[in-house]
Image 1 (tube, rainbow, N blue to C red):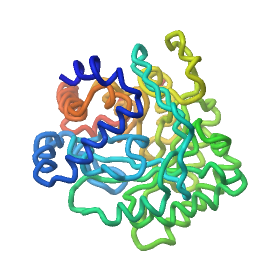
Image 2 (cartoon, one colour; image 1 turned 60 degrees about the horizontal axis):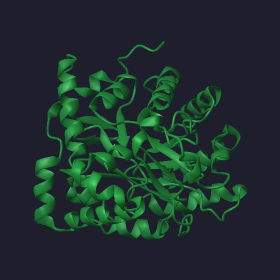
Image 3 (cartoon, rainbow, N blue to C red; image 1 turned 90 degrees about the vertical axis):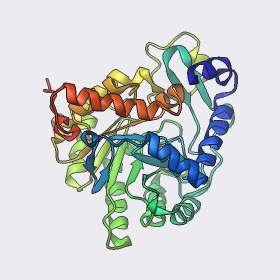
Length: 362
């Protein structure tokens, strides 16, 4: 039914408008306790083979929603009720900002992809912190927060900008992600160089440690467009600084292999199926570099359970998606978790955790 609706109605509406309408329905479902509980009972993964312990958290399954869908933490309970084991809010910046001018989100239907240049549109870290603090923590879904640089802040003041967000969100984020890999904030990807990244990650880690007795797991999210040597350098730095994990990967600025006409849409990062091969390459390289010393979170091009299982066997403890959720609809998380449980059993594992990193690296 969703595919018919998408084909006949959704694809005729601008991508951002469709997002707002669909997300409004999800938020509505999350606010109505009886409906939310009914959806959660039906859609939340319950198969014990899928249970994962990662980043100090017990999760009913490995699939989470990547940052970008719920930028301000306004719909996490509705999203959790759809079957995501965890939801990553953001990207959140220290200051509220409107993002880039419209249009800034495009469907690349023939490529099973999206192109976005949203520009970290959000209401700011203080608003996100207040909203998450007021949330009923007993509703179940784990919520992480992804933080980025405020656009108007100069690059040489980026560390202080990230620290402001980290301090505000330390008490409400079950894990925190430093995003230095979006292509839509000028100069942001420069922060991926170890020279810039070291003081940034060290400062955010110290801020989280100073915030209170609870240790907040810290991860960094990297771009698929990094050179292999730079991936190794970031991996080594993450281990050195005692980070908890790496998310691989963000969107790509590459247009290789896309259908004709994409160049006319302008700048932005591509997500979805075109990322599949490169994101898996980055993940495999990270696993070979860090082993099981860090939690690796796979994102980019995960469309079905086969993709997710391939990432897990390549070394990912957790997987994230966004674009496939847009194309697959509200039952997509449930379908992926169900099929992932089947694949795990067929491969002879008694727990999906046992499959992590079992694919030999070349």
